[in-house]
Amino acid sequence: MNTPLQAGSLKIAKIMGIPIRVHFSWLIIFGLITWSLSTFYFPKAAPQLPVTAYWISGTIAALLLFVSVAFHELSHSFVALKYKLPIINITLFIFGGVAQMKGEPANPKIEFRMAIAGPLSSFFLSLVFFIIYNLVTSEVVKALFSYLAELNLILGAFNLIPGFPMDGGRVVRAYIWKQTNDFFYATRKASSYGQKIALFFIIFGLISIFTGFSNGLWLMLIGWFLYTAAQASYQQASLQETLTGVKVKDIMVKDIVSISPDTTIDTAVNEYFLKYGYGGFPVVGNGKFLGILTLKEIKDVSKERWKIVKISEIFTPHDKRWEVSGEEDAMKALELMINEDKGRLMVTEKGNVIGLITRNGIAKYVQVRGEIKAER
Image 1 (cartoon, rainbow, N blue to C red):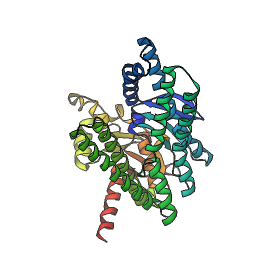
Image 2: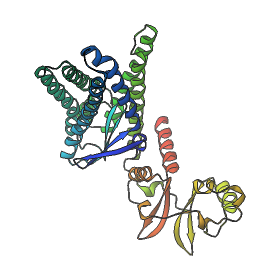
Image 3: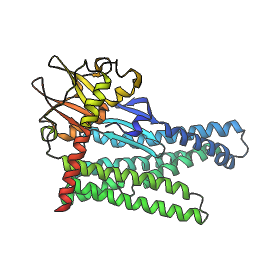
């Protein structure tokens, strides 16, 4: 799935066949780290050096921290690839990094090994940087590797926090999964731990601000990020559980309302969008499915031209990528819609259109299933 992180990121490299992306928020933390190290940390560690040396050292430290986070995520990815779990990309952002997998681990053992690989890699780098720190003699170089050793130690320890989606939370999920043999229950439980831990960070950060602790705001930001991520993971697990075993044919709309390409925008708005309340309609001409018309295309045309512009001029032509089979899993259809940024897909059978499945349709299905489950 495309994520908000991927949407605001830029691909910079490809390692082990995995695209490495940098989110724009990383530039913020890169700048802050470089500035703070160059103006405070290195001048204090080696006061006799020129200003240029501090800025060079600060930039190198920030870049090596960048490499450290990437190494952490690549460690997860290496284990995932070993078990034939494809990695879509790795995105580095303000709070660290995230490796986006295509699918979930097949069993708790794989989940545990993937999760623990990240912190172990950070501890390994911390040890390497500590050894280098003891070998060099230059004050500024010693300060550089001392900083990197400490940061990697903190990165490894921080990721062991036992709340999903942190690495420690994934270890917890693996344990619960093994004990209960229920992946979705384990995910929801580990995510709930993550939310509780995040709330602790937020509350502790708030108290710290009022007591004069300088890092209070930073703790609140970390807590907010963890809470948001844990909540999203909880909702994702609930969604996957609800849609397990559900086929596209179980949710699709069979009685399709189509629009002719010769219809004007004005007629389409008044006799289709306002009448039926749908967000999009298939465009069919001479019995052939041509594409989809949505409100997005209509909004791109000034209202003064609605009476003269025809649908044939603005609809989105169909692409085979936006087709699914009725036997396809509903969850896979939803993932395809998100990946392709589409609100609806055509359901086909032997080249013929037999239905339409939409994000709203899936959302309503999940909502009703949730309400029925709650009443039991």
